[in-house]
Length: 212
Image (cartoon, rainbow, N blue to C red):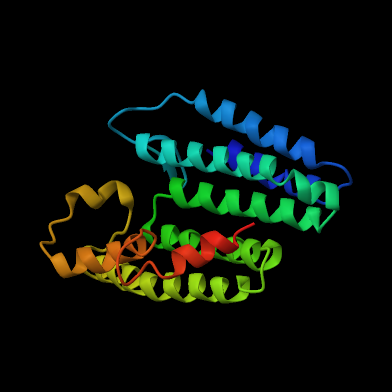
């Protein structure tokens, strides 16, 4: 897992070099094909290193993240032609990819929360920096506050699990014996707010319309 993380980190200097748009795009797709060749276990975590691991679900999510970031670069060719802060745009995409990679591969619940919230920052910058209409500021604020307030119960739930069980490693979550539906719904609220659900989906159309 660390080799892919370092690969993305070393892509950051390329973002600020001249005429490296196509090279960054090719490296992202090359990394996707390299990641597809990892040997995965169907039932357990594999590629374990310090606080990082991968199962079949996280493998698919990481692969999807790399694929979508590559498509974002392909769809942004017009920004490259206009030279509209293309270096910062590339850095933003790579930083978002790093945050998503860390979110889906980390084994600690608290670190998962930090990286999950950290991916909000480049998304917010993408909407507010490269959106097409003045309403992008309002859409960015909707995205920020809906996501932050819905994620607070997840943080409190993680603290509660650590206080009760003295561990928050994802691998050991299957041994939890907590029959608490309120805890479950409070922790899952951070993910439900991302779905088109009644009362919590008001930010979704705004963010999707204003996204570059």
